[in-house]
Image 1 (cartoon, rainbow, N blue to C red):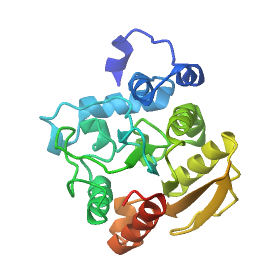
Image 2: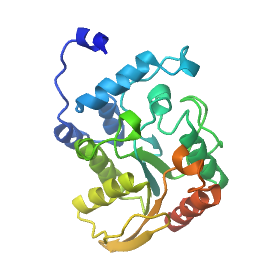
Image 3: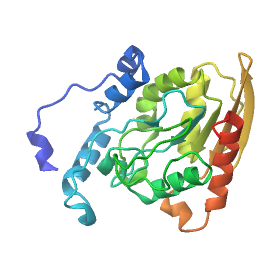
Length: 251
């Protein structure tokens, strides 16, 4: 990564300050893609964008943090782990251009949320009904494993996003234990009395805050590690997403 040494040093993003200053979801998304708070993730996402995967040598990689995707007044929020190195980090859209995205959008299409069953590029015409997808960490991490420190550094983005969507959102889905923890932590920080529930596929909790009922439900992440081994099947993922969508009246 010697090429990085030729770049001028950048002032690190004060994530908490910048996130608090955002007045709309559009502003949040715009600030996210400029974030450079985590040195390890910045170096990795940019290295991947230069070195590339052999199959994508002719592609122009995004190589920046990834904003959320979907409607601005969702009834259903889906929280994933982080962008894929050669998926979202290449295409510039969350869960787009890799096998995990194929599984997620395929499932959302089957239950009537996604317009088309795949998500391959940013301008493929994909749209979501009453739904928004986000991640606990916004940059592609080495080995798909962000650290807890990186999750916590990124948390103000998720927190601010939650503040904007909570007036309409009634269901939250956490894809994987890492995202589940970020989801629960974020809602609790906003004063929601989320019960302690150990992560597991299909586990759920329903709670009331300020007279409004919310559903939190977990799923295994649609990573190849889970889908290739049969730990997560299409019916399993469909069941979780459909339950969340029906509770929130997204379908």
